[in-house]
Structures are given as structure tokens and as C-alpha cells.
Length: 264
Image (tube, rainbow, N blue to C red; front, side, top):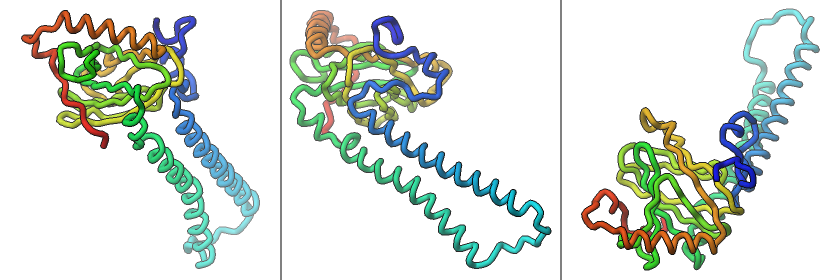
């Protein structure tokens, strides 16, 4: 299945690029970010309308006024300008800041959700020019063993379950992006960065790199497939058995990975 195919949730990214709308939300928590942006844009539109109205009023009222020297205004007028400017910043940026802190504390930085959920999927991602390698612990539940499942530009997760991502880069800085899940995270050489998300429905969506990483940056794309928990468990079980049977201890390039890190 491909994004935008009949019967498949997810629109073709090329079609999304031709609209002003955000990519469709497939995340359990993405609606909070969408609402945050919508309220911010609404406040900005109100302020723009007020400023434009004020400008039109001033032009109409003073269009026949005699020219006067620019002296910076009176102390009272300067105070009014300062109060209005601070008020505008406080309403727009202050609202955005406070609501952003709520999202950070309750969702993005709240790793207690994936830590405590019994069915959390743990995923190690290795970014390099120009592909995404994903590693899952196999049937033994441990990373760095013969039954680890490694995929190339193919990430598969279950619906309705937290997905805990630990991300590294093998060469330069990359940007892990799931536009439909409102996820963006830098992949930095020598550092393990972490995030988590939860899919709200099944489908196929894009994995993209948002950080220019070289001549073939535009090719650094993959697919995120959201399956039912049952189908995902069946896929992982079969892939783990195939990995164990095909394991080659001499293939050192395939043995990238690390001991799973604690939550930040």
C-alpha cells in the first residue's frame, strides 16, 4: 500500500503540499498541537485586522491634516504604544507559551506513559545518508541479540499503543519527522535522542528527513505503517524468527545498536 492509495488512510504528500492545511492528523495527541496553532493564528488574525483598521482610520481621519515635524509623540502617546505592544505580545505569545508548556508536560516530555504502559513498542532508529534503519527487540525482548528485527525505510507500529523512539545518526545531523503524527526530532551523531508518539488509527504515512543532510537529502524517505496490535505482533514474531535463522555474527555492519536507555 502507498500513501493516498484507495482504501488507505493518509494523503499523498504531494497533494498535501498543494494545500494550506496541515497534514492530516493520525496521532492520538496531535489535535492538541493543531488546536494550539489554530488559536495562535486566530489571535494573529485579530491583531492584524485591528492594526489594519487602525491604519485605515488614521489615514481617513488625518489625510487633510497639515504636515508636522516628527517629534516622537508625547509621553502619553508613547505610553499607549508601549502598553498596546506589550499587551499584544502577552496575549499572543503568552497564550502560546502557556499552552505549549501544558503540552510539553502532559505529552511530549511525559515519558511515564511509555515507561508504564505494558505494551509499549521500543524502537531504535539509526539515521544515515540517506536512509532510516529501524531495530526492534525480537521475541526475547532484548536489544543486541540474534533475533533483533532490522528494517530499512520501513517502520511498523501498532495502533493505540505508545511507541518509544530512541534516535541516533551515523554521520551528519538528520531530522526525523512524522508530519502526520506531529513528531520532529534531531538525529545527532554521538547522541541518543528520545521521543514518543501514539497512533490513533491504522494506515500508511510518510517518514521524512527535515534537516538538509547532503546531496540525496530528498531521497531520505520511508514509510510508517500502523497495524492492528494483533497484526503487528504476528509480523514481529515472524520477522524475529527469520532474523534469528539468518543471523550472521560476521556481518558487523548489521549489528549497530545500543543498550536501551532510560527515559530522560
